[in-house]
Length: 161
Image 1 (tube, helix red, strand yellow):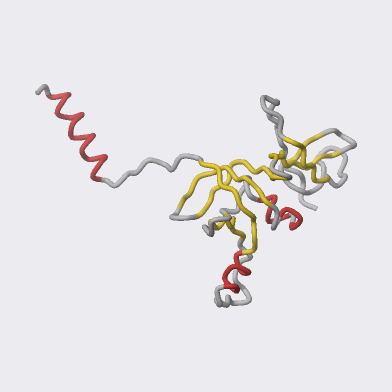
Image 2 (cartoon, rainbow, N blue to C red; image 1 turned 60 degrees about the vertical axis):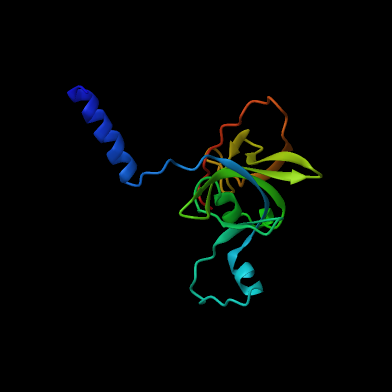
Protein backbone atom coordinates (compact mmCIF):
# COMPACT_ATOMS: atom_id res chain seq x y z
CA UNK A 1 0.00 0.00 0.00
CA UNK A 2 1.33 3.45 -0.86
CA UNK A 3 1.82 6.10 1.80
CA UNK A 4 -1.16 8.30 0.62
CA UNK A 5 -3.42 5.23 0.65
CA UNK A 6 -2.39 4.37 4.23
CA UNK A 7 -3.09 7.97 5.32
CA UNK A 8 -6.57 7.85 3.73
CA UNK A 9 -7.37 4.53 5.43
CA UNK A 10 -6.27 5.93 8.81
CA UNK A 11 -8.34 9.10 8.33
CA UNK A 12 -11.42 7.08 7.36
CA UNK A 13 -10.97 4.74 10.33
CA UNK A 14 -10.49 7.57 12.81
CA UNK A 15 -13.63 9.33 11.53
CA UNK A 16 -15.63 6.20 12.25
CA UNK A 17 -14.14 5.85 15.73
CA UNK A 18 -14.84 9.47 16.62
CA UNK A 19 -18.55 8.72 16.80
CA UNK A 20 -19.49 11.15 14.06
CA UNK A 21 -22.93 10.23 12.87
CA UNK A 22 -24.58 11.71 9.82
CA UNK A 23 -27.26 14.34 10.36
CA UNK A 24 -30.82 13.03 10.46
CA UNK A 25 -32.62 13.50 7.14
CA UNK A 26 -35.65 15.78 6.99
CA UNK A 27 -38.98 14.00 7.33
CA UNK A 28 -42.62 15.07 7.46
CA UNK A 29 -44.60 14.60 10.68
CA UNK A 30 -48.37 15.07 11.05
CA UNK A 31 -50.20 15.96 14.23
CA UNK A 32 -51.23 18.91 16.38
CA UNK A 33 -48.99 21.48 18.03
CA UNK A 34 -49.86 21.63 21.72
CA UNK A 35 -48.44 23.11 24.90
CA UNK A 36 -45.91 20.74 26.41
CA UNK A 37 -47.22 21.65 29.88
CA UNK A 38 -50.69 20.31 29.00
CA UNK A 39 -49.20 16.98 27.86
CA UNK A 40 -47.21 16.71 31.09
CA UNK A 41 -50.23 17.64 33.20
CA UNK A 42 -52.33 14.96 31.45
CA UNK A 43 -49.67 12.46 32.57
CA UNK A 44 -49.80 13.77 36.15
CA UNK A 45 -46.50 15.66 35.93
CA UNK A 46 -46.43 19.16 37.44
CA UNK A 47 -43.89 21.77 36.32
CA UNK A 48 -42.51 24.72 38.24
CA UNK A 49 -44.27 28.02 37.50
CA UNK A 50 -41.10 29.44 35.95
CA UNK A 51 -40.65 26.53 33.49
CA UNK A 52 -40.40 27.62 29.87
CA UNK A 53 -43.58 27.49 27.80
CA UNK A 54 -42.54 24.82 25.33
CA UNK A 55 -44.60 23.36 22.51
CA UNK A 56 -44.64 19.88 21.03
CA UNK A 57 -46.09 18.11 18.02
CA UNK A 58 -48.45 15.38 19.22
CA UNK A 59 -48.96 12.82 16.46
CA UNK A 60 -52.10 10.73 16.02
CA UNK A 61 -50.24 7.53 16.94
CA UNK A 62 -49.12 9.05 20.26
CA UNK A 63 -45.57 10.15 19.47
CA UNK A 64 -44.61 13.51 20.97
CA UNK A 65 -41.84 15.69 19.56
CA UNK A 66 -40.91 18.87 21.48
CA UNK A 67 -40.33 21.75 19.04
CA UNK A 68 -37.03 23.60 18.77
CA UNK A 69 -38.02 27.27 18.90
CA UNK A 70 -36.50 28.87 15.79
CA UNK A 71 -37.52 30.42 12.45
CA UNK A 72 -39.31 27.24 11.33
CA UNK A 73 -41.54 26.87 14.41
CA UNK A 74 -41.77 30.41 15.79
CA UNK A 75 -45.21 31.04 14.25
CA UNK A 76 -46.69 28.43 16.63
CA UNK A 77 -45.17 30.14 19.67
CA UNK A 78 -46.40 33.59 18.59
CA UNK A 79 -49.84 32.72 17.16
CA UNK A 80 -51.91 30.55 19.50
CA UNK A 81 -54.60 30.19 16.79
CA UNK A 82 -52.24 27.74 15.05
CA UNK A 83 -52.10 25.45 18.05
CA UNK A 84 -54.38 22.39 18.26
CA UNK A 85 -55.05 22.24 14.53
CA UNK A 86 -53.77 19.50 12.27
CA UNK A 87 -50.42 20.37 10.68
CA UNK A 88 -47.67 18.73 8.66
CA UNK A 89 -44.25 19.78 9.86
CA UNK A 90 -41.13 19.02 7.88
CA UNK A 91 -37.88 18.87 9.77
CA UNK A 92 -35.34 16.64 11.40
CA UNK A 93 -35.09 15.09 14.82
CA UNK A 94 -32.21 16.42 16.86
CA UNK A 95 -30.95 15.93 20.43
CA UNK A 96 -32.92 12.70 20.64
CA UNK A 97 -36.53 13.58 19.92
CA UNK A 98 -36.62 17.38 19.47
CA UNK A 99 -38.13 18.47 16.14
CA UNK A 100 -36.18 21.15 14.25
CA UNK A 101 -38.90 22.46 11.90
CA UNK A 102 -37.95 23.69 8.43
CA UNK A 103 -41.45 23.95 6.89
CA UNK A 104 -45.00 24.04 8.26
CA UNK A 105 -48.33 23.47 6.55
CA UNK A 106 -51.82 23.09 7.90
CA UNK A 107 -54.25 20.36 6.86
CA UNK A 108 -57.84 21.45 6.22
CA UNK A 109 -60.40 18.83 5.13
CA UNK A 110 -57.53 16.54 4.11
CA UNK A 111 -55.86 19.17 1.90
CA UNK A 112 -52.49 20.74 2.64
CA UNK A 113 -52.40 24.53 3.07
CA UNK A 114 -49.47 26.95 3.03
CA UNK A 115 -49.23 29.16 6.13
CA UNK A 116 -47.92 32.71 6.00
CA UNK A 117 -48.69 36.22 7.19
CA UNK A 118 -49.66 38.92 4.71
CA UNK A 119 -49.65 42.72 4.58
CA UNK A 120 -52.55 43.86 2.38
CA UNK A 121 -51.09 47.38 2.02
CA UNK A 122 -47.65 46.36 0.78
CA UNK A 123 -48.30 42.87 -0.66
CA UNK A 124 -45.50 41.36 1.42
CA UNK A 125 -45.47 37.85 2.89
CA UNK A 126 -44.00 37.05 6.30
CA UNK A 127 -43.10 33.84 8.14
CA UNK A 128 -44.61 34.88 11.47
CA UNK A 129 -47.02 37.42 12.98
CA UNK A 130 -45.82 40.94 13.68
CA UNK A 131 -45.63 44.35 12.04
CA UNK A 132 -44.94 44.99 8.35
CA UNK A 133 -41.43 46.27 7.68
CA UNK A 134 -42.76 48.67 5.02
CA UNK A 135 -45.90 50.35 6.38
CA UNK A 136 -45.88 49.32 10.04
CA UNK A 137 -49.32 47.70 9.79
CA UNK A 138 -50.15 44.40 11.44
CA UNK A 139 -49.85 41.35 9.17
CA UNK A 140 -52.62 38.74 9.06
CA UNK A 141 -52.56 34.96 8.86
CA UNK A 142 -53.26 33.41 5.45
CA UNK A 143 -53.97 29.73 4.90
CA UNK A 144 -53.90 29.05 1.16
CA UNK A 145 -54.42 25.64 -0.39
CA UNK A 146 -51.08 24.30 -1.57
CA UNK A 147 -50.94 23.90 -5.34
CA UNK A 148 -48.55 21.34 -6.83
CA UNK A 149 -45.75 23.07 -8.73
CA UNK A 150 -46.61 26.53 -7.36
CA UNK A 151 -43.72 28.94 -6.87
CA UNK A 152 -42.28 29.03 -3.35
CA UNK A 153 -43.03 32.20 -1.40
CA UNK A 154 -40.04 34.10 -0.07
CA UNK A 155 -41.07 34.99 3.47
CA UNK A 156 -39.74 37.96 5.43
CA UNK A 157 -39.35 38.37 9.20
CA UNK A 158 -41.62 41.18 10.46
CA UNK A 159 -40.76 43.72 13.13
CA UNK A 160 -41.75 42.81 16.68
CA UNK A 161 -45.04 44.37 17.78
